[in-house]
Image 1 (spheres, helix red, strand yellow):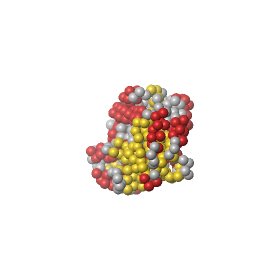
Image 2 (image 1 turned 135 degrees about the horizontal axis):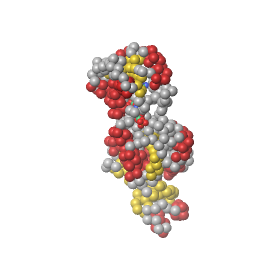
Image 3 (image 1 turned 45 degrees about the horizontal axis):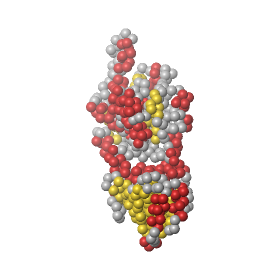
Image 4 (image 1 turned 45 degrees about the vertical axis):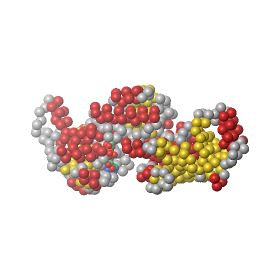
Length: 526
Ligand SMILES: NC(=O)c1ccc[n+]([C@@H]2O[C@H](COP(=O)([O-])OP(=O)(O)OC[C@H]3O[C@@H](n4cnc5c(N)ncnc54)[C@H](O)[C@@H]3O)[C@@H](O)[C@H]2O)c1
Ligand SMILES: O=C(O)[C@H](O)COP(=O)(O)O
């Protein structure tokens, strides 16, 4: 499988991809048309913020399974287009957090002490000691908009510089802010109190142009403004006017509405404006972190189907993955099993989580059940990303029910599918820490390992029927590796689940179905 890298990443990441047996093609700085061509036969795509993964790129990428962002921001990726094609989109949150936070503090100090301007002046042969008098940050208040990973570290760092911190973030728990020594306030109060304002949100519809004329007007006179998050959160035309009028005394931007930004941007002509070309994550440490993380994630997905840090698939990691992983695998098997039992278009899927498993965040298990259910019809078109979308598009109603108690097992995953052809139910459990077992097929109780080439046979519960099934398979040279019989004594019926070394041919299947006492025989491939 081939991984295309279109933005520069650290060598360590490239090495990991190669060591995982993946073919790596590095084509940096491609023009849009060249990207459309290059992405055609790529299974994985590694990017930073330069490459634009548009709907057109997604449409051209016939084999693409995963986009990996060596970094955080994904506003250069059309995630909706990826969802539709079942392409997993992952990033590496945290890998460049320290660097971005340190860059913000560096910009704040450089702006306060005119370091870039003084450097330029000295390099022009001048010694302008008076011109560059600055201001201390100690004792001043920093207003942080968006106190997530980076905002939190900025808050910690500036408290070391003896600043006070107020923050606005509608999604943060007050106790977490309190632990950071930060006072949570509304946006108006932040504007009224802050001497410096630094934004650390993603670029979202509600944050686009958040720092605009209206907000600048509400700020203190002589405030200093920073954006090391995403271009577009600050309205650059309004910032220019505020810097010109002196309402905003100085500003520092690492990110721009249009990148790369050029001398056409009037901000670059202002003395009270300093900037860097999107350098927040550009440190040796951050680049090694994100390259290694993205390479490991892509290799794990392409070679083992493991999903980490995906933004369009319910992600499970660490401890949760250890607990939930066996249920994800069981859910997919149960879904696939039911898909093989089903006649007619599915109308409704009900997933029951009983016992221990009900305590977990089961969203990834539900996705796995849907993937299993649809895989036999849609084959490789279906994956963890698009399974819920495909179910919705087909009008399948999906419901979940949870109960902390389960009668016979400590945990039970029960899936019921209703379709034009009737209703079927299967249930499974995890023995020990990770052994999946199929324990119920409709009214029949059994204990089977859900894997391999299986045959699901319904038969009459009378002497000789099982013998005839064994004989038919034996005569065809089919070896039975495992056999489970579930009895419905009330109705004199059995269900037999056979696991064979190889799939049965259509001929053998037809012969089985003709046997006296065999009601039905269906192959189940898991
Ligand atoms: N300059 C760089 O090179 C660089 C490097 C890394 C990250 N970034 C960018 O920095 C930003 C923050 O990254 P992070 O890792 O801290 O993200 P994060 O998701 O950890 O934090 C973002 C915070 O913003 C908050 N938020 C969302 N909408 C908000 C709103 N309307 N008002 C106020 N707060 C809001 C969220 O609740 C969250 O706490 C992102 O835009 C990311 O792309 C830039
Ligand atoms: O979102 C990010 O991770 C940063 O903006 C870094 O972007 P870069 O990898 O293009 O430097």
